[in-house]
Image (cartoon, rainbow, N blue to C red; front, side, top):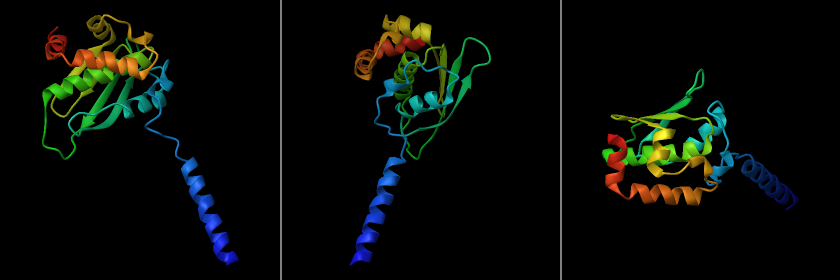
Length: 164
């Protein structure tokens, strides 16, 4: 009986240890990374891992362009095993993700989104002009997501953004 109790406590200890060793919780507030810099690979990586991917595609890596200003980020996506490809979804994903990155990463001036069959480049200046707001002024995910969803709901605004 004592042997069983010892095994039980040992297994309980192992489970507690393993649970405490999981440092990445995707449900954590993304705004904990506010005031990051393009050169901080860990922070930028954590931000991008928490952002949505379009049509079952997955982030396949990122490049940080920090050697000279303006500083930028390149996000590369790879195709998952889903057949659907909707250009509208790419555009909305690019705007949504760029909005959050520009709000959180101080010195990011541009972001290039490389999807399987489409590429979009978004600058901080153009996106802020489109919203009519400075993205760095946002302090929480809820308010920023609300603004973004409001603009993305208007397909005309989204199309106009990419035409200009």
